[in-house]
Length: 611
Image (cartoon, rainbow, N blue to C red):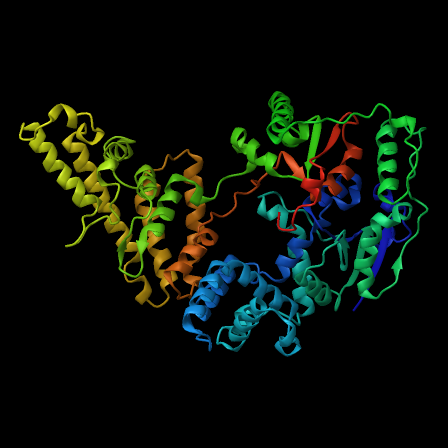
């Protein structure tokens, strides 16, 4: 393995490090896109097709592992495994355990994928020392490895030199291709050396990737280390010492702030004092930072309002600028980083266009598919209504014919009190469904109109007696169409081989023939539909048979349109993981830009890892 580790003491002067000339013309991969942006801004020589993210390299090397199709296949294999297994456990207890495993199936699959990425051997697991919950995880992993689809859970090993070479080159141009930009030439890039920047958490896939790449390439691991704050940086040394290699460092370029540095020395002095305090050194506060201000907000809503004003001012400047260099975010005079991301949930409501496009299932027609899936009773082969809002979502979606837009949902809302207790769409010999009750309501209204019912004045106060008969007819017709459509999608689903493929074939046909023709040709939604159809073209690759519940669980993964070139979420308030590259980029920006570090209270900083 050809692997070496270097540090740099000043991120603005990596080019003054003794090893710089040996890596400047090589392929560089950073831990985040913001770090890519920052290095591109500071080092012109790296901005010519030499920079990409570590994630892009991993996906280029293991494309199948990160493919949605693989994830769905693995999910269905796990589902089928749990359904087939019959352990020697008391039946009632196993029923409860099985329900728990199903409820936590995504987490279970993520754990199994992690074990597969690590290449964990079952013989190395000390069964006597694991918990009962871990026992079920190991049992599921064991069953999968012994099954006929074990290879789907295997991370590829032993690449050829040409495969490694192609992966490195593919990763370097991945971003340009994804965004539809002119692909930068990488002919001048020395791909025999691969430089990895700033990784603190080495995942199993990254470690496997490093192992495979270093068989044929020289790999250099590079990270920032400042000796003057050694306690703060100790975790970096702890992580990289696990490689059992010499970490090569020199500190001639280490930056030490002084009051003689203008401008922004005040900020550097503040940072130095915070750094020393975090490093365990308590000193008297310097007078040089007496003018530093702390902005305090009573709550997240107030903070959001402050950010919104800054963003709106930036948007005006952006639209007024004929040249438009960068995005709206780059015009913000104040940049925000927060340990609590809930502020973006508020800002999304006011600036939805800034946060990228929505998932197909977030649109009304997407709600239609979610609703009919929620209502389908796979055991009895019909619609089971547990929440009337599912019916409302279907009527509001535009998937069902109506003479006037909005008429179906209006009639439904006026009449729903009459059938609110129904649990079926069409009834049977024992109980009435929604359609049956609507037909009864029609008969009652006919009698009312003919004066055959007493208490006319009182009944007229009920909303469902103030609906026209033709409006009820239209609603009945729509509900019968809903019943038919749902059966086309799901009837006999459990009895088919390769049922996922057949379902998505039907769905693709429905989108092409029923939804796409009615979409506005100039609308964003039609573009999303077309990209969804591109994704659905891959249905021929799906060779999966599983339960209806499994289909429900995986729909969100598969029914996601292909990403629009150049369009992605741009968080107005970024998280702390994005600080590295953006602060690095600040050296080439307007010196008057203010960087805010927000929500740094104990309650926000000391949250669970998942949060």
